[in-house]
Length: 179
Image (cartoon, rainbow, N blue to C red):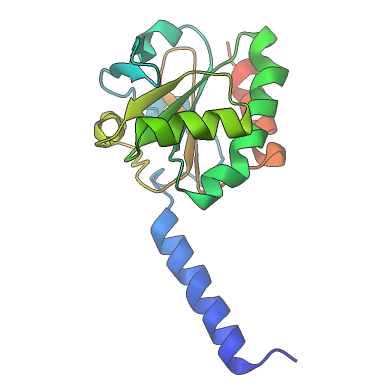
C-alpha cells in the first residue's frame, strides 16, 4: 500500500506538471493533428544559430518541419534529445527538417548540450525567448515543447512536455502524408 503522503505528493506533482506544461493547442489534444482550417502560421522567425550564423525558419517552408524548444539546463529536454536526433535521422531523407530553438540559455551551454547528445540539426540561439513569441498562438512556453509544421509552415501538431518516439513518429508520418 502506498503511504498517503507519498500518494498526495505524487498527485500534487502530477497536477503541477500538467499546469506547467499546459495543452497550449487550444481544443486539440497534445500530439493530435490540428485541423487544417485551424492551423496558424507563426510570425517571422529569424535569428542566429548556435555558431552565430543567420538562420531563417522560412528557409524550411515547403517541407514538413519539426521545431523543438529546449534549453541545456532543462532535464526533460535532455531526456528527449536522443529521441529527436533519432527521428530526425530516420526522416531527413523523406524531406523532413528539424530545427531547435534554444531559449533562456548560454551559447556555451547550448553548444555543450548539442555535443553531448550528438544533435546534428540546426538550432536557433534565443537567450531572451523572443522566438517563442512568434508561436504565441500555440504557446510553446513550457520546456520542452515540440511542434510539427506542415509544408505551408503552419503549426499542425504540438507536443507540450517530453516527446517520445512512439508519439512523434506516427504524428510526423501523418503530416508527411498530407498533400
